[in-house]
Length: 398
Image 1: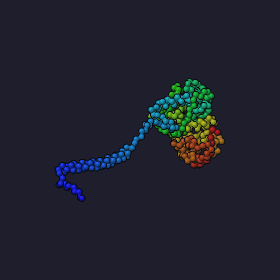
Image 2 (image 1 turned 30 degrees about the vertical axis):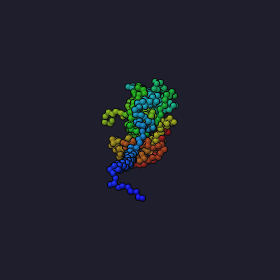
Image 3 (image 1 turned 60 degrees about the vertical axis):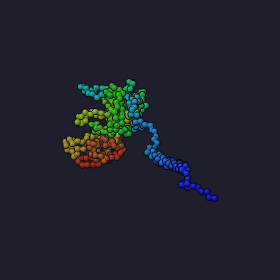
Image 4 (image 1 turned 90 degrees about the horizontal axis):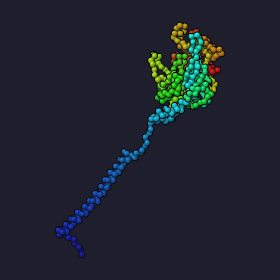
């Protein structure tokens, strides 16, 4: 038997209303489900894109501590720029006790009656060994008799001269008394312009252990002594250096002696007044010269055994010489390398090795480029003829 369901037209109004309500409810439910699924996809897509963008543009930061501003010295000592005054004070406290005032009796002044009057000269120096060896300048102790050193605490001790090197303006003294402190010689080759340095000494012989501060203004300077040679490879500083500071140490912020103060330039060739032009012998040269003087009593320099006069345009005109350069031989030592090579009075030495002698290349400084025992060709002008002589260099200490 087939069961028949009434069609739409056969339904009464009440049934039709119920069917419409049911259909509407079903459609609303389906719409909510579909909308929920679509919304979830959109949110997920935005979430993925947003997360990826944050990770790419703003990676997780790492917190770092700020780096303090420091200055590195040639020996690797770190100095906080905000504490540099404390550093200078500490260096002075460490090195100061090693600095001495050098006092000597000098007989250099002629009296109206033809005799010599004695006077006191003074400079500075610094202990470089526990055995009592002291470095100072040659010009501080030149022509002196009795020598004394005054320690930073005022104690006075007699000193003996061990040896000097006039060309480097260095001298070594020794005392058998108490050594309150010893200064360390640093490496002057690593000093650069602009680095802070400290000069310690006794200006005017009265103001013992005075301290001045400046910088290395330049390296490798040469100063003409007016004696036929230059003191070369000097450190230039603007730390105040006055009479009496000569022989005292120039110290870096690591507390190491990087130079021995030797001279100050007050004016130029034109007479212009200059300020802050001090010069120091570099510590590497000091160490080499002092070591040899302590061991042997002298420092060996190459030597040929002549006395000479620098040639000039005036001399060349007056004596009708064929050149105004080089040096004129005015004396030859007996049994010297020069005599053995046949050099004569009146010879003009024009060239040593490959270096022609002129205003920039003095005889002494050119000769000092060689070592005792070297065989060197000397170009000589004799009676208008140019000759070449081979000379084996001797030593000034022999």
